Image 1 (cartoon, helix red, strand yellow):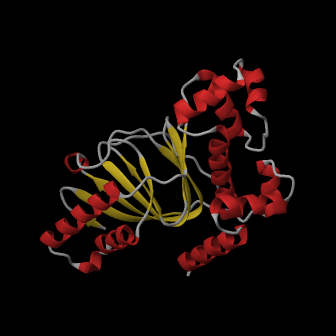
Image 2 (cartoon, helix red, strand yellow; image 1 turned 30 degrees about the vertical axis):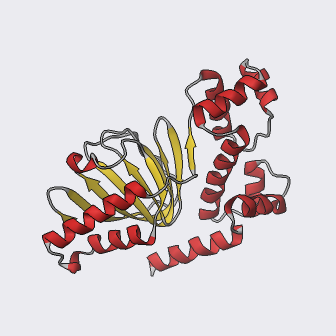
Length: 257
């Protein structure tokens, strides 16, 4: 652990072997969380996000948030004083961590490094600049405020296997297909199918982290078969489910070693 007046850096390992939801909380410090191993699912009132290995999230001060850990998760966490947070975005930002960000976090968290104050300050400044400049990830799931659209998204989050068209949802919530399509773009910035794919991808990653089979995931996500799920996952994630399972299992074994 490294500590000065501006930044606290800690290495954390969450030991949960099953889903465990934290209660919403906030703190006066900014928080940067880098996932090294495992899968983490975070929440605010405005969005959900999936964090797989190599991803990170910036949470501004006083932002209510909570999360779930899926199996064992290894993290590097930075708590940043409010004064330094002024140089960073005031919104939650999910990113794919660059090699430089990961390397800086590892170096700064290494208590045996014995960095001088000047050296550490320069590395922290570079890290904050990299966090700000890194583009946002597409694994964020924006949540709407419109009550009709919220009924749709809440229902899908509760049961991702549903395969209703916007017209069918419209009959359920009292809106036209055209109205729902417009609201999806206005309130989430995504088309309905894109929003749904992000949700399915998040649930798929959670399932893979827990060792669930393609056939089980197909049932959970509304696909006709395990092969159908596998083809979809390769298209949207650019990786085979078996590769993801092997990667996550390898990381878990390295943590336990």
